[in-house]
Image (cartoon, rainbow, N blue to C red):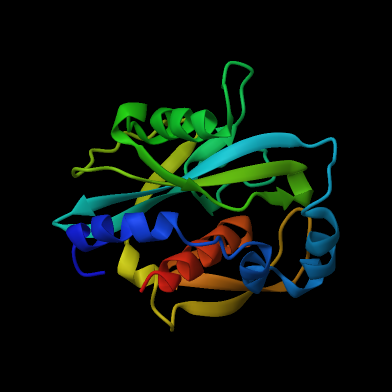
Length: 213
């Protein structure tokens, strides 16, 4: 998409399309976790709930989306590249409110600036026992971000067209607190590597947008 207006024109078509779903997400899952993801993703469990936001906005009239580099903490997902978002609070009336509120808290974009387009396919994350509910939204004007220091180390702005390219998927070998020397698929946006649950959600979003072309 070469202009933000082109993105806006596509929203009504997106709303009428089916979500690509779990099969799309699994394209970016580590091979060692495929069976586990298939077994657990759609089952009811005693899990915690969180929501994240894919927020598209204009920058120099070109559609961009925002990711964050999480602050280094003791958590399982410390330092990872992710969507803004977080845990559902008792005061949140539904999961979309969680996504909107957490986006405001983490990157300083008010709930009123975020216009929801659709929910995406929920994704269960075994290491942290969270069911994550992703949402797609847009902002009408250029944004000024303000990172929450305790949660966000840096803010990453990526052109939407980079996600839709054919040649941005690769593989890398990673070790984390819960897996050792595992080959995982990942997205590369310049020097930014995205893997894991965020990459799985991005793959569904990518397939979703490509359906609308």
